[in-house]
Image 1 (cartoon, rainbow, N blue to C red):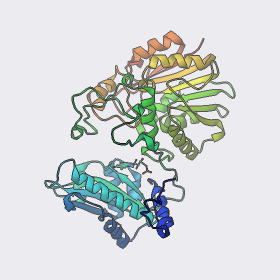
Image 2: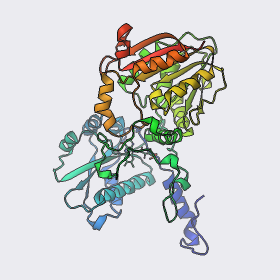
Image 3: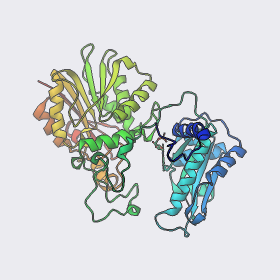
Image 4: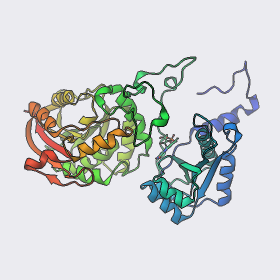
Amino acid sequence: MNRLRDDAEAVVPQDDAAHVRDILDRLAARASCRDFDESLISPEILEDIVRDGVEAPSSCNQQNWHFVIVADPARKRRARDISGGNHHFAECSALIYLCFQKGWTHGNFSIVQSVAGACYHMMLSAHLRGFQCIWNAGIGDQVALREMIGLPETFDVIGALAIGRAKATAPKNKAPRRPIHEIFSWEKFERPSASCYPVKPAAAYPYWEIRNDANPYAEWNPAHWRWDQLADFRGYSVWAKSPLAGVYVSRRQGEATAVEMSLLPALPSGAKVVEVMGWGGTTTTALMGALGHDAQLTFVELSANNLSFMTERLRREGHDMSRLHGEVMVNGTLPQADGSVDLVVLPQVLEHMPAPEAFLDEVRRVLAPGGYVLASVRNMTSAYGAHWRAVEAVGAIPNQGPFTPIAAADLATWMHTRFTIEADLGIGADATGDAARLTGDACQTGRLYAMRGRRA
Ligand SMILES: Cc1cc2nc3c(=O)[nH]c(=O)nc-3n(C[C@H](O)[C@H](O)[C@H](O)COP(=O)(O)O)c2cc1C
């Protein structure tokens, strides 16, 4: 428990201590909400929230921020579409767009720091008033947005605060925080190495050169990451969304996963299945749908944070949770005993690992004789591989962490060395959207390459 009052210093008068403690506890209970009930909040209250927010400090007291409140239902739907499908933009009571004037700002993005302070102050005001919020940097296409809110060229918009009332069924979980001693140090910098992520070697790392779609420093090759760094990255960023059913599903991924599942073998009753790093529960959900009703599925992830997210999300997907449980894998070693598993599923995850071949050895270790492995990879020797090199890999690392596609022929060689291959399949003829099944000579040309192997 945080100390509030030290008798030697006695900053907070004794009479106030309980009250102050209560306010701090209430502020600490704030959690982002992405599942609103579409009810309205009166314009007066929204204006009061903005009024509270501008009590925040601003650089040189210029207060060069501007907030555009969007509450009209048709415009909120337009905002949702511009954002690329943030459904909470349409369902919240109002969006407050975070804008600032350009040309008059000082160094170190001081105007951005000021707007951020005001935004958080508005969040706390809304929270104490009993509403819920979500702060979004992901607001979508700037041109369309500028047009919608009529923003002049001398102003920028950098985010949107969505305020509303949570649905009664909305998740209540709060995203986990790092242990406090990992994120501060006295007098000089000290930080656990697992939370310092690899970057490409460079003389300096000026942060103003970094954009989502152009990041010269992001290290996409997981061979340059350690398992504990990957665990740290994935464990916190899976909480970048709420554990709602359907979260982290893209149309492209959904259709391809369904094709991948067609390679699943027939399993004995009560079969033990292990899925590794299942995309925040997205592929776990597909797998549960495809497996027989009495299979037991263990989902393995790198951090307890992933397990808490996935457990809540899988519960909300309506699965029978008595057939599902999560376990943490430390340093690339599966928690399962030798020869104990009937099927291991690796859904486009080998390309996220520091040493994918070594991990296939690990899969072989835990498989029972006659047990199966279903492995798929994003294929470097496909149109997608070219797209990855030219577009994706020059941007920022996504929430699932660094990955580098694997050549289909490499996966084939690694799998043949360790398993008897029963089936393989290419998925997707193009770089992006489709989930076409590619067989025969074409199977190693697909966006994805999937194989089913069996342990002798
Ligand atoms: C500057 C900033 C930008 C954010 N952008 C987004 C976003 O675009 N989409 C989203 O779903 N959440 C966004 N968030 C919310 C964070 O994911 C969230 O605050 C974090 O996971 C911690 O969870 P908590 O707010 O429940 O404590 C943003 C938060 C901040 C501070």
